[in-house]
Image 1: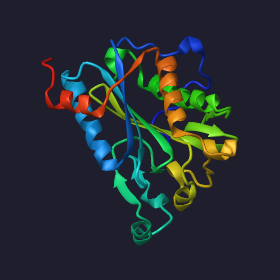
Image 2: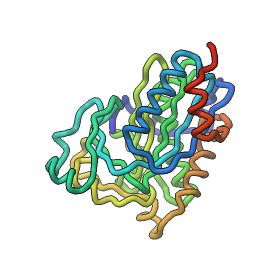
Image 3: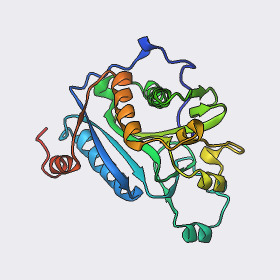
Length: 252
């Protein structure tokens, strides 16, 4: 996806983002329907914008099979018919993130950081580069060397794409986020031009390593890498606790 101008070609430790927020919380979820997760993002976003939720939230989850179309569209990059999608049980949903069409499914780790960029003093371009860095460092934990590609957002392994980034920012608060291919079936990517790129080949941690990777290990690694890159501690939070805060907001 190319939702933003290219970031610096290299990430250095001294460029690590340091958030000034008091705390971030991470909510670890199972496989979640895309629309359900989007609704949750919108509610967290509204609470962050209003100030009734006093901290940033990172949602970690997987999705049921779905193609999403970003702000740039991408239906023209869908290579199969609507009836084929229906028979295959794959949804097609238009969303407000940057970029073109992409696929989400079980075995792909998705992270949605709902972050007040203004209070955290993080610029949008640096934020996107930091999300790429989270994926690069997560892949490195499993001895897979992923890199940036100067002309296209996301992260790549030997010119094959392993991770995507697409965000949206409203009133200074980001939502949507990143998707790292872990164990998912890559077949649905053959039905599209991923992120609007013709001829791109997708890969995954499992393909690069040659064996299935425990998603619990990848989730733990990604939480650690979020902490490293953004310079914050992510505190675990259950979805029930988060729902209570969204239902009974703290007065701003």
